[in-house]
Length: 149
Ligand SMILES: CC(C)(COP(=O)(O)OP(=O)(O)OC[C@H]1O[C@@H](n2cnc3c(N)ncnc32)[C@H](O)[C@@H]1OP(=O)(O)O)[C@@H](O)C(=O)NCCC(=O)NCCS
Image 1 (tube, helix red, strand yellow):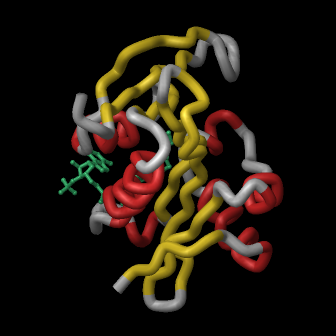
Image 2: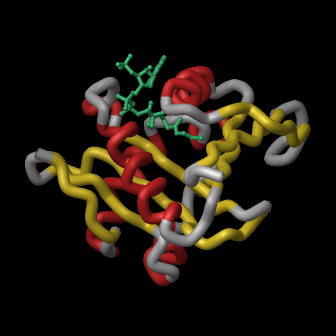
């Protein structure tokens, strides 16, 4: 049984461990300012049997082209391929659909598993942002329509 709840400051060390073990942050050698997104009420964690199994950060308001924006998602390595990522995305999509018709996200070109994941849950690649984060690293923009026309 998993629960998705707002992230608290006490969850930050576990979330930092997940980013330290995961792409794209490993390759980019970057972290996430979790405190900032807790204050903005945009950060959530997924709890499975008392352990932090993953986290999610998103903006449900239409911030770009009538859509909300997924800033980050990650599942702890031990919990991958069990449907947790898909469950967290459904949570974000349901909250975003209350305010926006679309949902957008970016994914680094080298992040193969994330690209397969987003494709499997209905996202389409709609744009490219060359050298956005680092020279030679391309970001793809992915999009999903959340509400019927
Ligand atoms: C991407 C990520 C969040 C997916 O989470 P997850 O809980 O493992 O995903 P799910 O179990 O919900 O997978 C749903 C479907 O996505 C696809 N998928 C997920 N991971 C995949 C992988 N490594 N390779 C190929 N397809 C994959 C599969 O179709 C999968 O269904 P299946 O397991 O029945 O075949 C996880 O791999 C992760 O945390 N990666 C590191 C962080 C990251 O890349 N975040 C995205 C940054 S843009």
